[in-house]
Image (cartoon, rainbow, N blue to C red; front, side):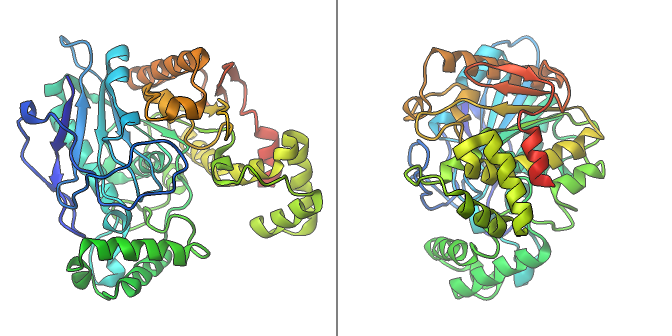
Length: 450
């Protein structure tokens, strides 16, 4: 039986999580409230998140394994949502099927979001940054200390997550404070290359404080919660052209993070920790208007010039490579590869020098968006509910693929390897799955990387 809403810490605004004594798990029968947030863009299915609480949101949930006479591998899930939305209570993140079928313990974690989780207070007179990552580290310490009582093996813990959740896992892997808290990491379409440096984090903080009308960390602590969320929304809009879509994001703070993931992993911070990572084939199609026709060749070249900051000749070479590979879908392919594929390659290359690394590509075509970002979410935990079945085109092949992926994630948690060769060998998951000797996009990625 699931143990839900276990408090692992209390959340005091703009302070590190404060661990709490172990709760009586027999009383933990309902999900805890989510961290405060505003509704996100309605791009994928999911129940609206309505139950939030700023101070009681730091809870986790445990789905025990089928076996009770020996400790089982543990998979710890971190949700996505651009670091501003999400909750472990969402139906698609239920761990029942994965735990029972694969005989593993599944844990899901709430962590603070947006300004409350990722505002760098140091620029405003405070002393801490990366509170969302501090939350995750606190939850992983709870798992280390307590999961054996719920049937989990603290020596075989794997973190996994998708999108911002994958980014959480990548940044945890890159953190020296996470040493010994998990044995493996699975990064699904993770945000790996938008880590803020001190200068950009300070810009986010000062912009937020100005828009909130509260120039110091003490004044921000005193604001009504709605004023914090209003300023957060306004900051995202104002900084989109300069900082990007996710200004509330992990930052290199000299404590949790000494460097961005690729650089930290290249320096050996996670030596010996196996990594399984991949993306969907059409990541950024989720964010493009499907009604718009493909751009003409000349317009595509100009767009690539501006987007990548390259000259006309270089843009022409890139466009030629992508038109030859992706045809009329050249722009979504360029956009997705630059935002997701190339950054992931850099992470894989960095970690491969220090640990076993395994790669995958998810190619399942959803009816309206293809193999876009987030289409893989219901396949991992096996929950085609809440509108996901219709969204992804659920059928017998989807069930087969989902079962294969669940078994692979469990195998990786148990053994540290997924069942195919190390990177650059790539498992291609889809209606027809196969193992490729290298990533199917290798040639066009080389053209894009130059």
